[in-house]
Image (cartoon, rainbow, N blue to C red; front, side):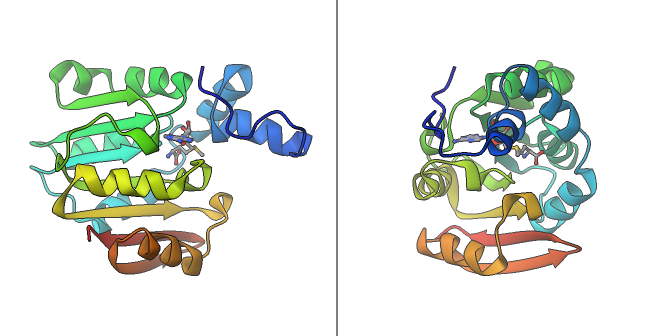
Length: 202
Ligand SMILES: C[S@@+](CC[C@H](N)C(=O)[O-])C[C@H]1O[C@@H](n2cnc3c(N)ncnc32)[C@H](O)[C@@H]1O
């Protein structure tokens, strides 16, 4: 079981702690409910991000914080002759996403691992594209996670960061966080109340 980066010091309200167990780092019965709610709920947003990211059929793609695995599923449909990998720090979500992508895992075109953003279990320069949705705000050290994404992306790789209002990211703070981590050419796209930042590996 991963350590709870929120600690147990009572600084969070009860509601915040419940939400964290359900959606932030899904764990136990609340995590099962959270995973069930998250599953299938963002397909349109994910398709929009995959288009902005310009995922190609032969691309190698990685997602960090894949939750129940919809991003992985849709990326694998687009990168149909490529490869999709992912990392999530919830054992529960890794199990769920593996079940929901079982055929592609069996075929060897998808690989889903348990792990954290700050320590991605992949070689340098492994991926053409990377993305993450509503997850970066939960990483205890966002800078370390972004540096890891830069390491595993090819030098001319592209990444997308998606945020719904739940992530509480404004376009300005997404731009600031990504630029200060060294990503280049930050482009912000907005749709309804969703944000997608597209960046080039710097
Ligand atoms: C709000 S959920 C979003 C899941 C999915 N991307 C979606 O949009 O439905 C956040 C996900 O990020 C994962 N996560 C949280 N902290 C993480 C970390 N440090 N490294 C990797 N994944 C993390 C959680 O386990 C959870 O699956």
